[in-house]
Every structure is written in C-alpha cells, then in structure tokens.
Image 1 (cartoon, rainbow, N blue to C red):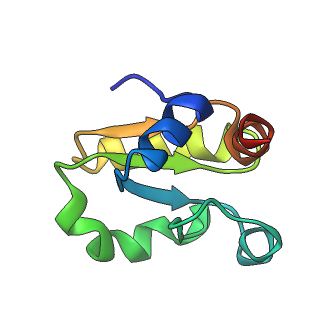
Image 2: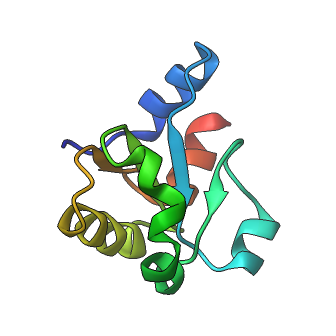
Length: 101
C-alpha cells in the first residue's frame, strides 16, 4: 500500500474520516505532542500488542513516528504479520505538524 502524505491525512481528518493512526513513538514522545485520535503503541511493544490490533488486519492503519524511520519498521513488521493495508505517514509527526500550521 502506498504511503500517505501529511496533507492527505489532514484533509481526510477534516472530512471526518477516522482511520486507525498508530503512533509507534515512545510514550513520553506521545505525551509531548500527538496526532488527534492516534493510538500509542511503541515500536518495541508491537509484538505483544498484535492481538489488540487484530480487528484492523484488513482495514487501513496509518503508522507514524517522529520522522519516519520507526514507522517504516512498524509497517514492514505489520505487513509480515498479515496486515493488508498499512501506510506510513511520510515525514512522520514533524511533517504532520508542519503541514497543519
């Protein structure tokens, strides 16, 4: 699945869409700032939290981190686990915040 730009995500949110936004940053990073509606599961916790995401296996999941590196790893991992519609937020949280200003 193709990645998503911050502008596209912002537009979809303004239109009332609510895909699962998965923040794979550490909890302290999520507390400092977050995308509205994002669920925080740190990258290193994904294996033990897979059951929590089972209902999303065939639905769109948008993963993000600070700049994109951890989210790329999360996308690859989730895809390997059978998730069929995982997208990385291009540029991560930083790009999302810059796009929203």
